[in-house]
Image 1: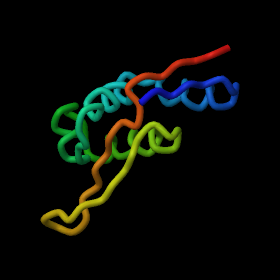
Image 2: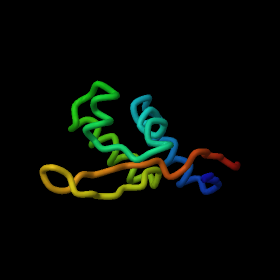
Image 3: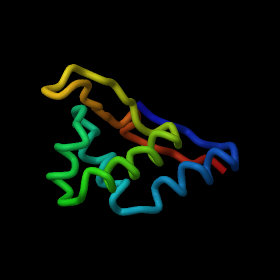
Image 4: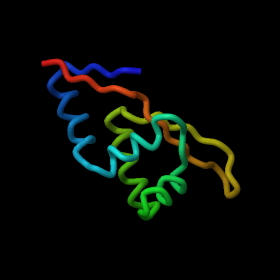
Length: 90
């Protein structure tokens, strides 16, 4: 699915979310399948807390789809990229 941005405020919001290598990597890692915070923290070699913070920023920018599923210790948060292409139209 493609996201086309033309509104200046939208462009700035998404650009800020994409201004981190870690956040771009999260989008890449979740482009084909949903992943848990634990899976992402292991793949990125980062703490779960840091990954959760990065996910919150991406979620706030509307770039991630979040679902919850039953896990071993309660609910498990799964995230997946909403878009495989982002276009900025000026």
